[in-house]
Amino acid sequence: MSVKVDSVANEAFPAPKVDTKMTVVRPIAECLKRKAADELNEKENTVAEELEVIKTWMRQSGHIRGRLEDQFLLGFLRSCKHSMERVKEKLDTYYTIRSVLPEVMRGRDPLDPFVRKAIRMGVTVPLPKTVHPDDPKIILIRGDAFDGDVCDFPDILKVFTMVGDILLRDDDQMMICGQAAIIDLGNSSSGHLFNFNLSFLRKASILNQQASPLRQKGFHFINTPKGFDIVLNIFKSLMTEKNRKRTILSHGSSLESLHKHFPKSVLPAELGGELGPVQQFVDEWEQRLIDNRTYLIEEESLGVDESRRRTTNPLAEEKDLFGTAGTFRKLEFD
Image (cartoon, rainbow, N blue to C red):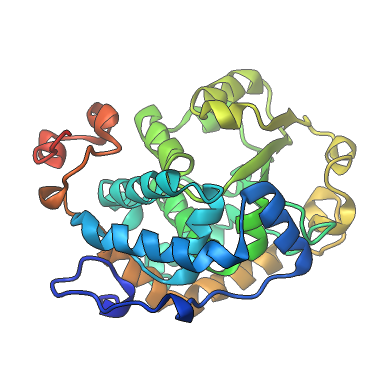
């Protein structure tokens, strides 16, 4: 399945002209407008022009086959605080890494039985409420829900990116205010946490940091196992310097400590909250992914064509990590 030509850069034939007066983005609440202006340098009267500059750059890049929808690109502008050069770098990295991680970025049909098992595992669960409408969105990561006998870590990361793709397109609060992660390790043992390929974890960290437009605002660990300090140090070593400066707290097994940062009104019952059981949100997101099946499958056709690249590959310094000479054989360095 392919994406319609009017929404994709670098099809086999020229893309149509875009009228900046026809910029299509959602209206947002006043509190989000203020936050976008104060923290992200957003100016309503220049957004249409900025979007057109990015679209022109993507069409002229030659190697990027990516989405041109206004709302999608606005997410990158907000993620990069409207710095055009950072947006270009982020978009290039976003599509480049997706082209070299087929185990994550291919086969993302939410109706596929195997993918559906990973979705129903409920490892990645966006929570529906925050205390204030301009607070960071809360993402619950349930480490204890992962079952290695049912699927592998790349399958869980696949679902994570599927959820992220929908949030990027649909959730203005997420794109303006960022996200705070609650990582519930439940009954996980330290051995369970070490049962990952470190090379793949490094790839995952790049996918979810340098290549992601979703901004992290903090990490809160709960129900941590014995020996977690070692795991936490590994986790920090995979983080960018910027994210290491974010709030990173281990609450041990203390829900009281967690509630000082996240009141019960925004948490599921499993974390002592008032939102009800987490399974209802797992089910809601399963249906939401199914409802967006066409969009998610379309994403598989997007990426980069290295044979047409005229700039430095943003992953060039990671070529030992991302693989074969073939992946990088056509790089041209300025």
